[in-house]
Image (cartoon, rainbow, N blue to C red):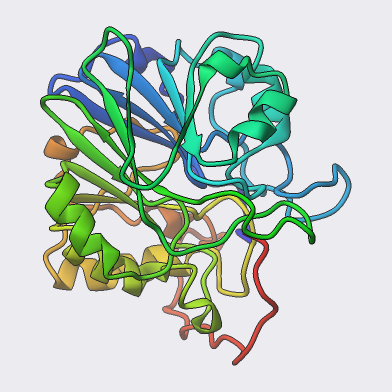
Length: 316
């Protein structure tokens, strides 16, 4: 984990003004992103809880808090949840959000969790792959699309619910959110049926070669981006929990090096920094300052961390 807290911005003042381009994203940690799209706010995989675990006392503990408290969030028009793993479907967060009236869009079967935790059934909209939900009275549709992952919150419920990537589209903009996935040729079909995309959010953290079929990692994420037809690329699923053996900043470093060589439009903001994809001009490697030496000199380049040849099957 990082040696110091990650830099984080307070986005609340900026959120009071609409984005000039109509599309703005604020990465709040892991896979939680506030998407402002043509006057509406969509929140992806909201996780404010302290652990990605069924226990309050054990399991992966977040090393970086969300830069905005849940009660300080602006009004949300829609919440989308990709699948039921603990780092994407968070009990304390859903229990708090159940007190409001925001609708939820999620994958088949996940609604049972939401309803059990207090969300009214009429607020829950489950989707199979290629099915869509349109927000009533609004120019916004969400379509579930294939991903290559798994589901389950206990040892005896593996794959009892669906997992999905999600496409959020208005008449002017489109956003792709991977949820969790491995590299799959289905992304070419997603491009053909649902693209092109103004913003692509792909998971890049918590990977291992032995998990190649269920998590992307940065190199496969770049391949997935090409299959999706490109677009501004905001990496998610990193910088919050330790869920694998690689260094916490290895996904960012790999993307920064390889993405620039490939001419990818990387969008890598600090936590809590609202960004409009069309206005992003280059990336500053802000994460390097976190583990910098006390004398403020740039640290020597470290060798790439070698991963063990095998690891236990991941929980997320």
